[in-house]
Image 1 (cartoon, rainbow, N blue to C red):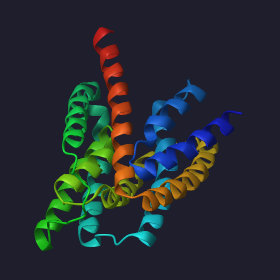
Image 2: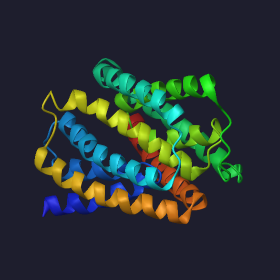
Image 3: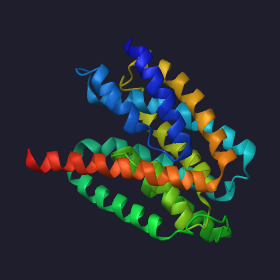
Image 4: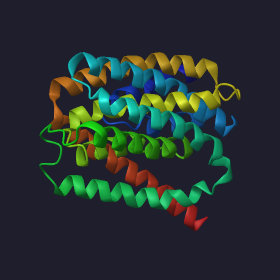
Length: 255
């Protein structure tokens, strides 16, 4: 019964993640409920294992329906791979709870900016070419890759916002590009989690299969419905994430 619950939630997580990111919002609470006594590292590792299959499936679906900006994505993925691994390695040495309020503020800023700028991400008009595109891609991949390895929640949505705001992508193409970079960050984290034994394999395999199915469904719907659909889902998931971060921060401060 527990694995069936994880499969259902894994499908839903893959579906939402393929559109705008945020699978951890769904999968991690479920795993903390099903495995209350498991080490936190094993739960995070299991989440990353299933997520990497979902993001890979979404990436494959997007590459069949869209023209991907590989000249930017390759250096972005290199930066994400290296710095996500570094973030995962040093997370134990840093006061992670202090990061939560900062992330909450950034999420609110992104949400308000996206809501106010009604035309943001409605037209796909890439602004950068050549070396500036490659270097900015590497920098963004490194920065958000480190954040994903170090802390994680909201990485996909931050990537989408950056691709829309600074690269001139529409929400559909930004979401597709974010999936590629997210795959790199998940792979980098697994380079740490798998050798250290931080995987619950039964749950990981079931959720990976569900994630793949959900990701194909989500990316297919995103391509069919277009950028306005992705923008609406983006704002909804951001609102949910803000509510969760706000609650967690309040609990942290009043504890």
